[in-house]
Length: 171
Ligand SMILES: *[C@@H]1O[C@H](CO)[C@@H](O)[C@H](O)[C@H]1NC(C)=O
Image (tube, rainbow, N blue to C red; front, side):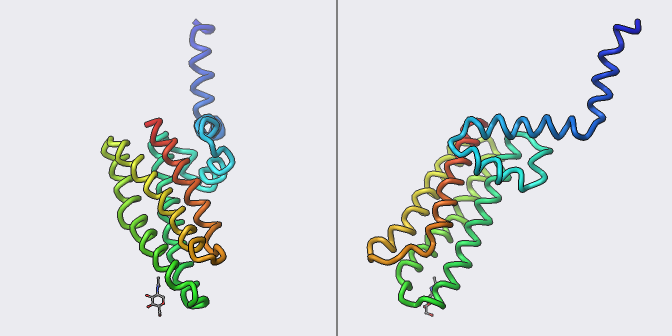
């Protein structure tokens, strides 16, 4: 009687420990990040959002899409301030602006809908579109032999788009 019920008691006790739950979800994050090509970016992005520890794979994917949306908006703000400080970059900045406007208004919202409605192929296509737009932004400056004032954000967004595509592929 006692040795039969003991494992249940131990399991019940473990489940009551907050750190047991946290470790379990941290394992999901670590194991999933390990099979992407962006382990460090994956871990740092997800662990900087506390809800990551309390959600499943779909939830983690939606968190990454939220980060993409934030970074897209941050890039648009940066574009506007560079447009004021460096009017000579007006043309490539305008191209970047159009691209990132589509990222935050079309690509990311459509990808979120795709994840929520079980149509991951559409979301994956959106991630490819975002990666192309981030490259196109730098290329606009390269083509005009200018320096690359947005390359740090463009590279981050390119990598985040592929990382998120990896997660979408697992749904
Ligand atoms: C940059 O500034 C010019 C001149 O004020 C303006 O016409 C243009 O719309 C601005 N572009 C962006 C992307 O904000």
